[in-house]
Length: 180
Image 1 (cartoon, rainbow, N blue to C red):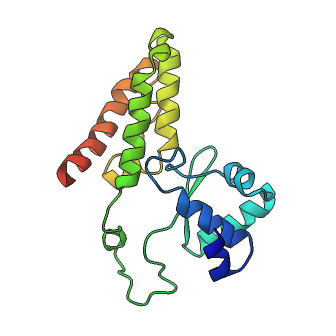
Image 2 (cartoon, helix red, strand yellow):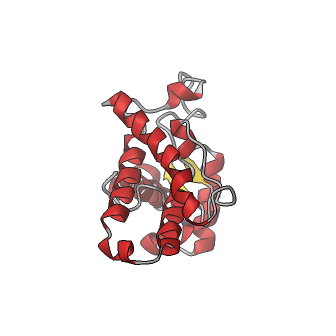
């Protein structure tokens, strides 16, 4: 963070840039992005100031907003088009050379934790489904990156959500298998 401040000055945007760049590790609990509330708490800025700075950074294509409730934020792709005339123009070329491994590992780690939660297995199926829906929503902005679509809870009510989520997770697993 101190190096970011030295490079970009002292301010909320430099602090957000440092915080978001530190949160991209797959082993980090925030690899799926950070909410405005998360960032405000971590950096001790007000939620309004944090939201305003994030909105400006999203418009500048430096930060990516993942829609959901609440929305989450990640550092943008490797190329910042406004500053790099040589940046590729097609979306596929803008994928970093390491692909989406941080997101894959975050998704698989979250699924593994959910499967390994012995207390959850003893709870009613409706609670288990609810936890899976939470996981699907948390990573909802990523499914299209792997060629999958989000699971519609209306289409798969109750315990049927397990059946709706299986192909989505399968698509992510296939993406990973092809690249190992």
